[in-house]
Length: 200
Image 1 (cartoon, rainbow, N blue to C red):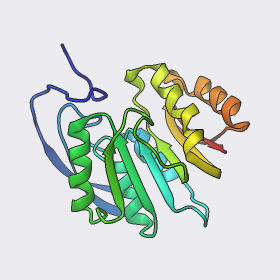
Image 2: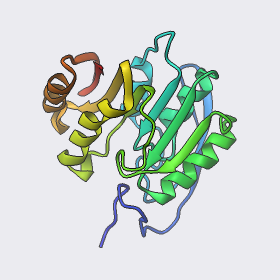
Image 3: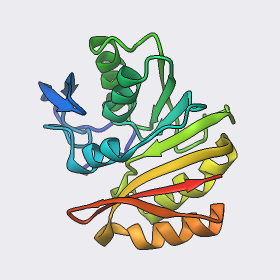
């Protein structure tokens, strides 16, 4: 049976790869592996999301849900060294890589990587931003859960930021965000990718 990147222990044979990526005019070094989402480069959706994010002056505690090998959380931590960044995933291989990549990009002191199936192990309720490139292949139920349950972990005025392709459910995700938070906007579109934002 093929096991995808959203499983706990993918059985794909290891094939680690390390490369440099330039994001927002900064160079990052990432190591990825088989059994992990976007194993050969930082995917276009993640880059588009990172380019679209803006933080308020009160922003300081970030949660990256479904972090994979860590590009979203690590880039944010590197560019905002006063932020605390938590990164979660269900995939053990991803979590190990995220920890290694945080260390190799010198942000391990301000990041925390831990296992959680969506928000099951997330206890904090004071995040100022929750950010996700959700695992679409895990199914709509998981994506909807990431969107709707974020509300329980955000401060008032905190923001949820999601990247989805139009063909993979961005319009229905926007509808759910509007129903859940009373607001939803598309802050960027690029090649079919939508960056969606709601504020609690």
